[in-house]
View 1 (cartoon, rainbow, N blue to C red):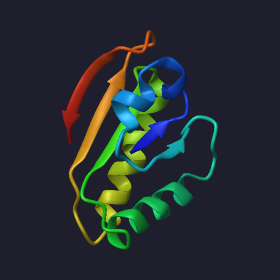
View 2: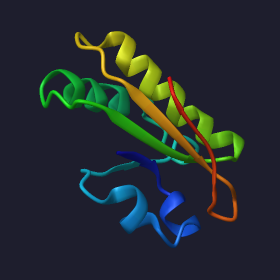
View 3: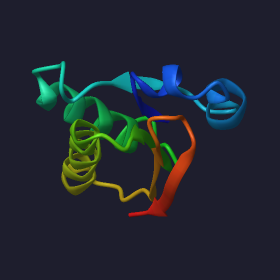
Length: 101
């Protein structure tokens, strides 16, 4: 799971609902400047660690959309193709949308 760092604070069920059984990576496209390092690490997870799927947990705020774009860029550059599920939380912490991209 790749989660925007604010998601754990928005959802009281973060650990039990979203993280159970998953490895976690945290990122913030608004506060972190070196997005290429995220892309490179995601490519390593896809190609070297050979993850089966990637879940991206973001908030409904505009800046979180950058995390989805980073994942899409990494998936395009990776040798393997993995399914990506995006879960969008409202600012109240409720699931607003879930979709496979």
